[in-house]
Length: 255
Image 1 (tube, one colour):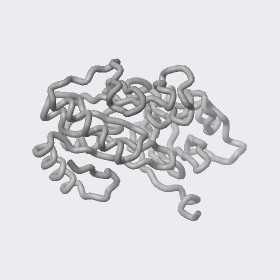
Image 2: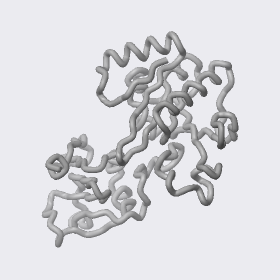
Image 3: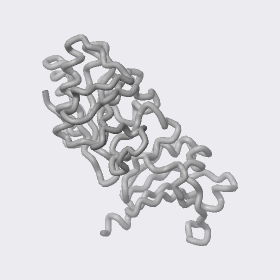
């Protein structure tokens, strides 16, 4: 069954028809999203919910070919009328290492299952996340999990109120006026990884302060929508509740 890259290399109508055809033939469609310099790769199924009344499957942080194979292999298990169980250690999914499945929190569905939402015309379907272990067979929530892999697979059963991959106490830049209650209207994620949250006030160095990333999100949860703003991107809006408009920063375009 085919895998589709969800980066505008195929038009929506063709993707819908391919998805429908593959679900009819094979029971599912696999969608693959390539990694960026900031965000990990991931892949997910469409069709298990429709054909087998089983949660869709998503997995992060591995090669595109391995992700495709894993989703298909798990789907074969589902087709054999076996229900995937959360919290169970699955030793046969990987040649070396264990695996577990987590329930994807409903608040995280819309962040990762865009094509599935378009296909189902709803976002209240269920999904499970396939979690892999590090080279010492430790899961991300276990002590001494290898730091190299921490950001490779966000845990979608948790952290739905703070979706950023960075630490909650990360130092972010904002304006003094934010402390006075003015809304954040522009956000930059620069190529060095710094986050800059601006009101509509002067953004000169003397007007900037440092705040913990979590404090910005707690004060305005709509900033969570920008957790996947890539390096060198910015987002703007006119007021809280307005839709964010994303773009590449001018400095990045000139490099």
